Amino acid sequence: MMSTTDPTVPAQHQPQPASEQPTEQLPHGAPLTDAASTAAPQYGYETPAYAYQAAAATPQRTTVKDTNTYALVAIILAFIAPIAGIIFGHLGLNQIKRTGDAGRGLALTAVIYGYCTIALGVLFVVMYIGFIVMIIGAAASGSYYY
Image (cartoon, rainbow, N blue to C red; front, side, top):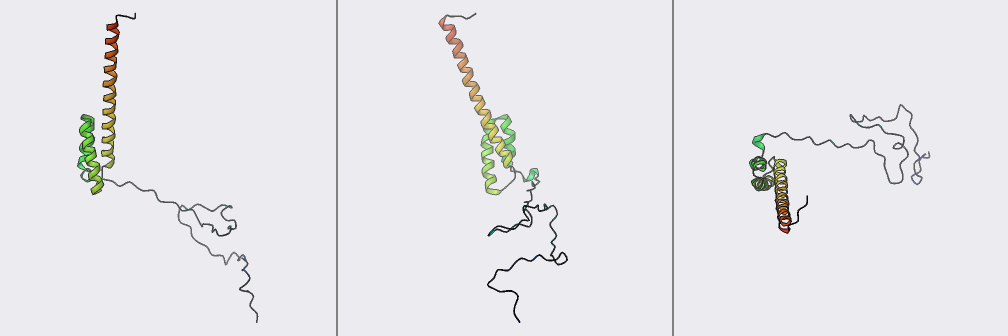
């Protein structure tokens, strides 16, 4: 008796009757496939059964006792004395990097707020001094604008 399949000839894909087709339960929330994804695959490519959806990272809840102490002190001092907020913020960031404590956002906020406050303070002082020098220069020249 002769075999119906020849190993040298590639196998033809024969559709199976509906009762013999395997079924697979898709995970909850998996999108249904559309006509483009069910088309015949191109050479060397395989069509995925469903798109992979990564689970969103849920934020971890922390308490005050888990938060880095330097970070808490830094955010408080940033509003009172920005230089102290910067110093404690950097100390807190270094400690958080070493130990893995919570509070990186607090320390980073204190550092950014402290630098911005100092930059705006320096800008104000430079503009104030420039304005005073301009007034004195105008008064000394003797020319008055009415």
